[in-house]
Amino acid sequence: MGPRDVVALAAEPRLTIASGPHVIEVAPSAGGRITRFATGFAGGLQDWLVPITLSGWPADTWPKGGSYPLVPFSNRVRDARFPAPDGERVELSTFPGMAHALHGFGQYAAWQVERHDADCIVMRYVHREDEHGWPWPFEAEQVIQANAEGARLSMRVLNRSARPMPVGMGFHPYFAAQEAEMDASIDWRHEGEIAVEPSGEAPARRHRREEEGYTRYLSGWSGRATLNFADGRTLSLDAGDTLDHVVVHCPAGAGYLCVEPVSHVSDGFNLDARGLRGTGVAVIAPGSEKAVSLVMATGVSRDERPAGAGA
Image 1 (cartoon, one colour):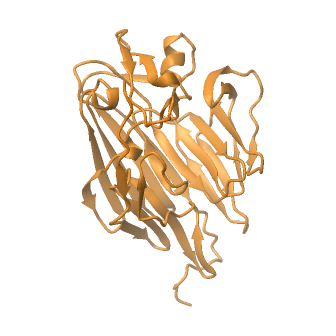
Image 2 (image 1 turned 90 degrees about the vertical axis):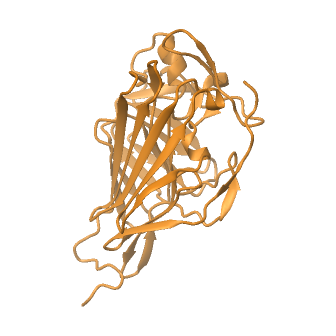
Image 3 (image 1 turned 180 degrees about the vertical axis):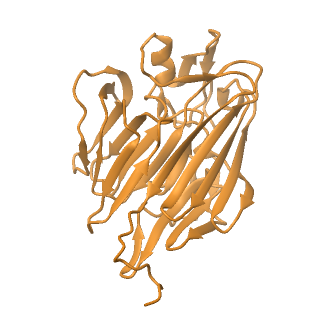
């Protein structure tokens, strides 16, 4: 498959939703991504995600901030090739200079707004048959909600083809946190950010932002994590049992920490085809769907009043 055209994504207009002190900004035309998630406190505004202020960018060089959807796969597909469930060899297009297919198609596309309420946005992405080399037509729906806790993200994928479709999903947030704590049982060995096999080593429980950087692929994750921020505040993640893999990503010198709840490991399609167990890859029948969700709870303390609250 040849290289993909690099299209420009426009982050305007942005849509805003809110619940109490919690505010979420969304750029539907720029990959259906969240560009800001913040909470107002008496001392000012707390950004949980690194905010995106750019008005647009080329699709292959996105800003490292906010949160975007991973669909219909997460992370990398080695050499942009994998065998389909029926044995067909799938070859995906990639952007110029990119050897592996990366992060699906959702974050590179404009999403159609289906509904915009005061506290909720519903968006849809329609993928055509063979577009970018993916043989299966599908639809993806995102629901982004601001609620009393903070935010709830959900996404579902519907197979519109006449054949079984492999699928993976997840969320890619860039947190302004210093550290993440979580429990997982499996650490995957990887080469060049392509997972190879379980390492046999016990996964770390605490993941700090480090100057030298790292990427960790974990599975057997409880679906829960606590993010610790420099000011002592915390953010709790709850992905339930639908996303039992997680990527912790901290590039060298970066001002963010990614904790990415996902349904399968990096290069899961190829690893699954080789017979490795525990990859998390799902195959959905024609007309069926897969759904995932993530709750981000702010843990606003009872003695801390939101900005603008009465005495």
